[in-house]
Image 1 (tube, rainbow, N blue to C red):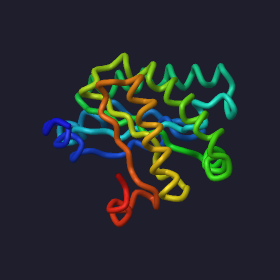
Image 2 (cartoon, rainbow, N blue to C red):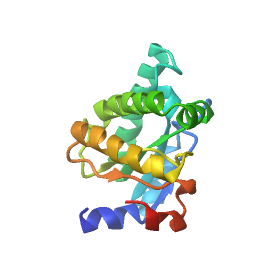
Image 3 (tube, one colour):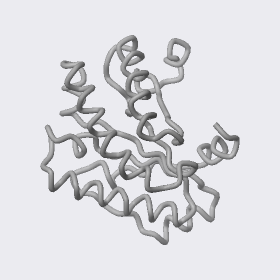
Length: 179
């Protein structure tokens, strides 16, 4: 990963509530400009996993979410940020993930197929892909799934930086056992 990317990732904030909740609230563009001027270079943009999986959402709502994501990326990039698109599970996907490895992997791949179509429209040096926030499964299982999912996403986004983190709420003490 280029040094400039690491540096940009180290000065940012999480923009929850825009793309990951039932009542999306768009940030004020003036506030985004102020934060950028103050030194923020990166936005982590959580996107609700269920909103990208047909088992949990309608085709119309899925398409609305993808349009909204494209608009969000355009706004953030035009303001000067680099953006991590974070696939953020809600309770319904987390339950599926804990209880059905095969079906949850199909749903993850479906979500990343949709996300890749939007992300690939933007410069790969500026938009990153966070595979899954805080997977709530056993570390050994996530290790296998993370490798499979990374390979799947890499095929769709060959030049995009992938962000992959361990289980246990991404705590640092989980890193030694995570590849």
